[in-house]
Image (cartoon, rainbow, N blue to C red; front, side):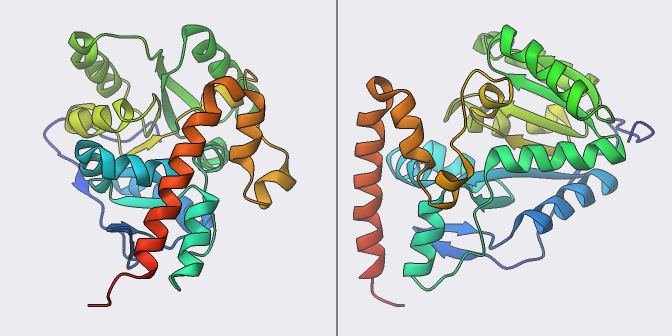
Length: 264
C-alpha cells in the first residue's frame, strides 16, 4: 500500500456501507461478521475512502445514554459492530439476530493478518510507551509484512493533540489503531479524522495490553460462553467488579424497556 497518493488536495470520501443496519437501543448496528468487515476495511484502503469503526458492547450502550457526546461520536462511525456477546444475545431476544460477535481485538488481528499479505501501513496510537514499544515488536514478529508507519503512546496533552494528528497524517498510514479509553478515544477519532487522513480508523480499547502480554485474555471457552467480562473481573476484582455490576444491571434494564417498547 506504499504507492498510494495521500495528497491533501484529494479529500477522502466517507465510505457508505452497503449493508442495511438494524436498530437497537436507538443505535444503528451493522449485522456483519468478521470476514465481511475485513472486506470493507480492505475496500476502504484500496479505494482511499474514510472508514471509522465503532465497537458496541453493553458498557458502551449504557455510557452512550449517559453521555450524549459519546453517543454522537460513536454514532458518527460509519461501521458499527457488535463487540459484546451481550449485544448479540440482546439482538436474538429482540428478534434482530446479529450474526456474530466481532470483537475489537479480533478485528485488529484480522486486519494485521490481511495486512501481512497486502502490505498495509499501520499507525499505533495509545497505551504507555513501554506497551507501545512492545506492540511494535509483536507486529514485526507475527505480521512481518505489515509496515509500521508510526506509533505514539497515549500520554499527550490536549494541546498536543494537533501535533499527534499531523504526525499521523505525515505517516501516510492505511490503518490507525487507537488504544485510548472511552470516551477520549471516540472524541479524538471524531475531532481529528479529517486532519489525520487515514482510510481506516479502529478504536481497539485495551487490545494493546493483551497483545503485549500485560493482560491475559479469557480462554476461548469463556469467550464462546460470553463470559469474557467475568474473566476480566476475576483478574482485577477491586477495580472492575463495581463497574460491571452497574453497567450490566443498567443494560438489562434497557433491554427490558426495549422488549416492551411499543412498535411504531
